[in-house]
Image (cartoon, rainbow, N blue to C red; front, side):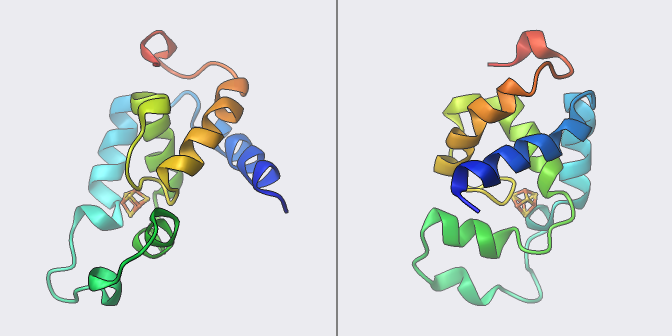
Length: 114
Ligand code: SF4
């Protein structure tokens, strides 16, 4: 599957979150996001490795139950200005995803979308 097809698939998948308010997404991500709780007892093996953003996204977000909510929230709040790793994607991949995601139509609180 090409990257474009993969991104279009992700944009479609995020449709289910279209009308979820931003504050609810934030609550879900803060409550259930894997990286929100740190790794106090079990520091990740990759911590000292030099990873690309894509590699970091793959390991950091692996197994996180709220990847889609995190991604939807970041696309809404940061848009094309997104930086770092969020929603299991690198910033380059989120910027590439953004136009596909916008094409899917309106979201909750769309007036505030960048
Ligand atoms: S998807 Fe990644 S960045 Fe977002 S909450 Fe989960 S672990 Fe953190």
